[in-house]
Length: 321
Image (cartoon, one colour):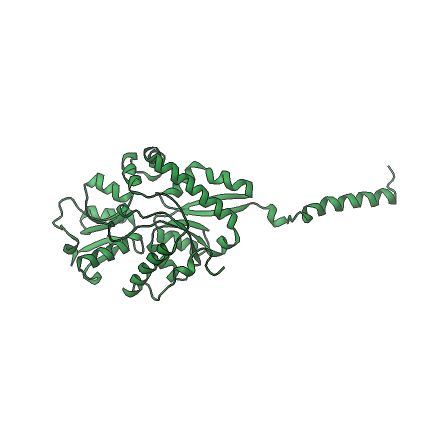
């Protein structure tokens, strides 16, 4: 077939139409690439259930997102990964984001769960002579540095009239903390569920003081600020998926425990105890929660645990926008 000028012009016009239509619709080559939401999670909680169910992937796939999950032993380690850009989102208790913000991490509070003060405690061995928090004076307490239970210990000592400096605090992650506790290297262990429930069942550890009446033990969902600011639709879909898992877990704690048991390595009956002490109902932070978190930050600064004052309100999603 002979290519005439007329045929060539028509073919060129058709090709230009095919390549420009997507551009006119707002498409770009970068948008054609799949986006990845990187989530950090711990062995226990709503995020690990969300991972197992796969419902987040179903919500995000139509928006062009995939999900990568990374496990961490505790909140401080998770937020260090967020600080260095290794993850975009995760969940911790009250204390870790305070230490992370004080260290300059670009984090933002996205949402929280209601208080669960029974979900953390200061434990002592079954036969320990220690009968009250006041008896901890001169004793060694092991805990995960910068975790929720760090603040629990501070407030419990304050309530008992014991100075923080009158207790030796040894910093160990949960697995090492339990080993020290069981071997007698520590007089008490400040720990959270499900490790708390596991120790209670396996060793008959006695609760010296839980959080009731002195701390709230909120769980916070946190993101890297640049990511949250740039990807509001994906973040909203993630919070909606968390809310759905929350409602299911609240109504089905035994079934949720059975799903968690293989990944956590803790028997389902023990996890059921922990899940029944947890709270459910994810929602944005209100002024009261921000003020409570600010009190924790101010307490840590007064004790010299963080180097300078911080503003929680400035790190809440939407602040300054």
